Image (tube, rainbow, N blue to C red; front, side):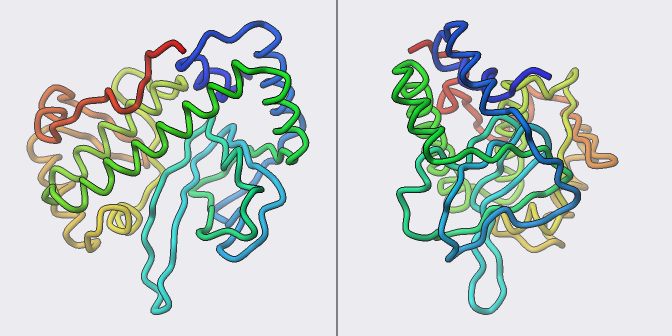
Length: 238
């Protein structure tokens, strides 16, 4: 199996054969996890870094009254997070959205990895900066776009990220999200989310079946979302 972390980081910089071997070593002895579950919860002390090799995850916060805000999606190749052990405790939770293959990496392994390879250290920082750029775009999405454009922008972004790690076939990729989860991401009710999806289907923009999304008219989807993938830095070389 190709290590998706290697695919992702090679978008940011040229990796040597030694760098690739070091990254592949992180993916040894992963754990198969079935169904949805939390990897770590808000308030827990982070002892390890999780590497998602298969499946999807997410970051979220829950208000005292039970309302949830999803603040990031995690795809294969994502580290959660390479520097998290600096924190005394988690300020948000990490969960799985589907069956997943997850490698657990110790603090010492991460420190050794970045000490031995300046290239990998730079690529990880670059990846962190992209995560911050994604968060900024999500804030703009919720603050300034209407419901239709929010979801269109999210679909374009997820398509681009899935493509980066080889998960897109044609114009289709797995999207293991419920309408409730989409709503909790975009600040919408499930009813409003359903209306947007039905409109997109009616306009022949998407096909969403069995948790697999096909974007039928990418040009129109990008136009509606005013989507520019530059912030994802998918083809930069450091």
